[in-house]
Image (tube, rainbow over all chains, first blue to last red):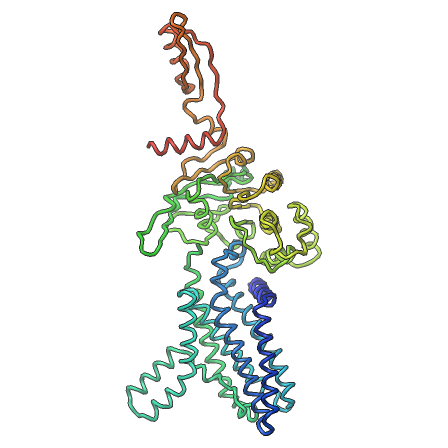
Length: 254
Length: 303
């Protein structure tokens, strides 16, 4: 099973790697890095902070775009172009195919995050922050994995446009949940508190993985908080992939 | 070429019993597109699956390969229910529209399907890859991206991926559609060679001339129902009016011609003679598969 999943993942990776759109995206991020450098040069005091903020945001947005757009269209494209046919007539199960596609996109996300992250770290010229910087990248990567799983699930049940709209809504809600909870606690209104609790069960709390700050770069994330957040992400990935599997298994591939 | 198991039972590569499939389209009532299909493909046979466009050929193949879930019915591959993992290992398939990953080269595309069968990427793959590409006359496509392939080349690389692992049973959906005469000739030769090497083949087409040349068995589908299952010879023999009688009345010089079946032949000749006609010509009219197919469908329409 692992070999078959890996084969599909590597094939999907190859597809995106050879896709010019992906290279254009990477190029756009590199240009953004250059602009960050230029902006940083203009302000002596804030040089490092501006470079970090703009650089890490561009990596985050690249991953977001990759997972929501490519994740949301990848399976649909397979079904529309009927490229799945020769694959699924082989001993490849539908779940293996799904997992392979997911893994391939995630592999692209991982490689681009590592490459661009490494580049940004070199520009920041602060080797002492490597460990904390890696944790920030890990947060981006796991958030991407959750959103990718969501995009794949939605692509199986909704049209591409509606799927993308819902994915972006969940992304925004996921980052807003922490504030919602804070306001609910402050309000002391039991109904509001209950509403915030329900929302936290219904949507993934993506704010938990938002470690993109100079504070984290300097001080890091406490181990227990980091592990809990990653476990939260893994739980959501598991749930969304399981739901995708159920839907895809029953789907008539016409 | 029907194989018999050690216990004496005839074995089939595929057996389909009472397969029903509904097509659900938004806003419309579900329509039964496969109305209880039953047929079998004996091991070692070269079976043609004939039907006009929209008859249900591709839907049937999709149901066989579990791309769609039938409402009811039974599908057995190699005597096992459904399309099991082991059955898939023994199966090769080429879809109707050869849309493959066009960013891959011919070799990479074959390697993808090789690896999905759990086979190791070693020297054996390289030699098998060369062998298969030579078999489909596509050696020059080895390091060429599929997006640079012509329609005929795509069709051939499609066949190459379906046979790279030497399957026992090969399903081809319209392998000759849209090809020029050279391309069709080549594909027919590949099919013939595979059959003579012992592969069971099941392929759909509406090119009856090709079917007549190649097939040992025919399965004909019309409006979601199997209307014929048997050999091409039997199908041609089913024609009711395949004898021609030409007679002349010597007195009036009037000529009469009619077509009749073999069973009616003697009766019709006697009738002519009783009416004072001289039977001049009795001949058997040979019909081709196309005529037999059209007749079969006409007869069904009358029913």
